[in-house]
Image (cartoon, rainbow, N blue to C red; front, side, top):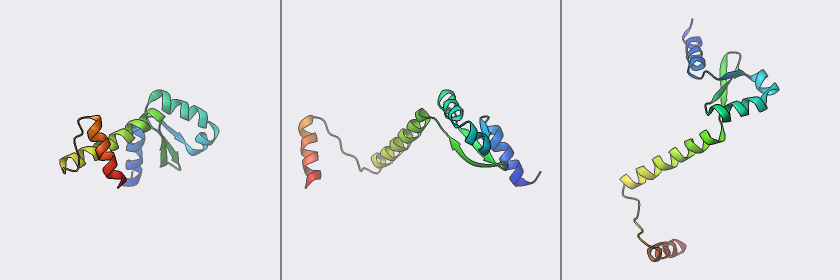
Length: 99
């Protein structure tokens, strides 16, 4: 086995849910159902090479939320955040943003 074939083999093993591009064309609804139900990516292969992955909406939302939280934490650590204690402070802050 060459290195590239080995890499693709491990990708298939890591993502137990995989499908060929042709199967994806024929059974797309089943693939989406599986991705949503199993909450794991379904990797699409063509000619034994990964093309992409189908993920369910819950997993997509989780990934997006993780990214937002990571960015927020980085901003907090850099001191780019502001504490707002009550509605009046919030109104003042929003008024500053409008200027």
